[in-house]
Length: 370
Image (cartoon, rainbow, N blue to C red):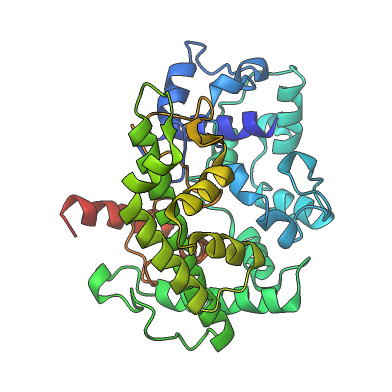
């Protein structure tokens, strides 16, 4: 049901913008091919099909945020296990209060759609209510900002850190109209912003070092996938380790740097400990054992693990949930910092009603080589 509603939201938004590309939408190619010739009629039975929409929906990135902000009841760890909280219901009602498709609430109309009682979900009120391109009203934006600042189901230290980070990026977002090279903020981490305390800044820098280690580990696995090639037979662990020797050395150096930066997360420390081993074959063995989705170890041989194997035609490992390639964005925070900081910057622009103009400015600067 959630997948169908997200697919519907993106499809309607693409239609309303004449299928213009937009970073707030997903699935333009597949949605256009699945749209069919039904005109304004989009039955739930059609939209609910798994092949109708993308395999990595946007809602997957909300799994940690929704319970942390108190918009769903605490307890479940997967989206499909969430139950909306009273605060979440009030937030949705507030955000959708200005829309009344067929003289009823948006949620009521969507329930009728899911139950097969209507296939009329392309009217302007539905498009405006669901489209990720439509700004929310001021009241619901104020509630969201308050939730970001105060949190709910979290330790006080986490709430304080997010509030401080929000204050930091809010200051930076005031300069969104200035060229990237002139905007406030720094692309390196040599200077701590006044809004962030020392411990938080140290953790951000340690996280940056660990993300670099993660990327270098992915590069090692990619090199092995290329060594195996499209045929997908196998390669010996020792041969692959020798082939990837330089990349493993870079991984080892990055893991050491991560440790020296004060990395504190137990799982991250364990991973770095595995990567600093002086035996290249042992390091590669640990990486393949952790992967198991693209590559797997059988005795002393590395073999394809399944359909995710592509023989080195592209990077074998997808970005972690919630992360994305933001290299095309000029965001005035240190390179390599957590995707959450970059997302918080863009969310701040959205809260202030500037995101659409900022995205247009970013596209214009990229077009002109800025």
